[in-house]
Length: 388
Image (cartoon, rainbow, N blue to C red; front, side, top):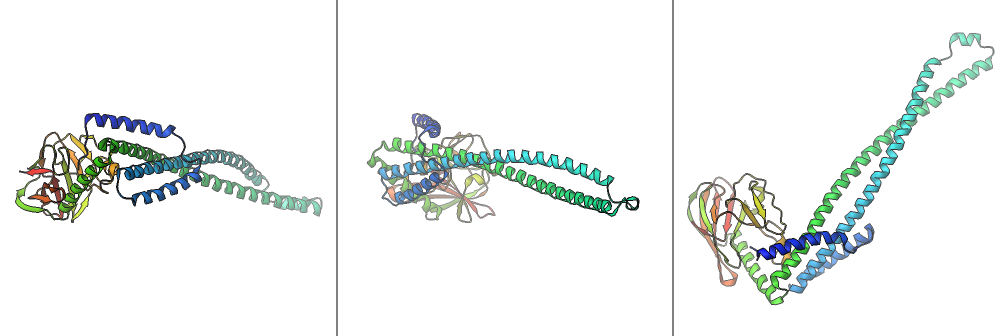
């Protein structure tokens, strides 16, 4: 599933995306405060559910995308309000900690002085009792010592309470600082998402020329290709075993040009583990790349070499991609669309090579190859290719 692109369109979309991210920071407020933002978020989420239930048309898709944009803007402004509140809390906690620290220093000095004085007047000695001029004087000395000891105990308790409060406030401030960093990351992600959503809307208008008939044609093609890919993944394709292959062995060639409801040469690469589709980036190793997807994540973290030679061009990522969001074509992209420095395709691991094809809607046949990995429950699918 490879979206239609040209150099002009890519350049235009990049400009639109950058402008949109900037514009999001200076445009009119969606909501005036945290409570208002949360109400707006609920309102847009309800509208989003209602819009999804409508019949698929260009106008309903644009309405859906605009609602998503407004929802993201409300979430951004809600996050901004929470950030502002958290920053104020951190500042207030800082001031409180400073005051507690000063009080603690002051009380500690007094307590130390009291301890020194206590050693000097630790108790009423036998000689003081013997030489006391009268019983009243002796009683007063006892009362004074008892009062001093009680004051010292109170001072010690107060100092300990301030120590505990000081420690709690420091811990709370550290927690708020951590929360603030998380909120800033959330805001960055939401701002990026807003840019992608605005770019997706512009991309839809460009691809369809804002024409309903063109949209329906593209929608039918995309869904036909999606149905074919789902059929292949479920095992409904016609397959013939060719041979056993080793890791890195040439197994196919990418079809030049359009192929079965998809425009543009590319490899649609799928990984199945135990019959379940998984994210190919979890298996493929980091590599030199150019991201041409319109903002899809490119985050390989595995150990496999790539099925095409670097530099890798990512045309569509895995999951809910920019292209998926741009036109309501389908809900989920179950592989990655890539090209490399040549059309040669190699096996990422050793296994049994099968040549396959699937004929479905739209009157076309989608060719592919499958490699069932040796001693493993993993298989890899390579679509829009001719087997070697």
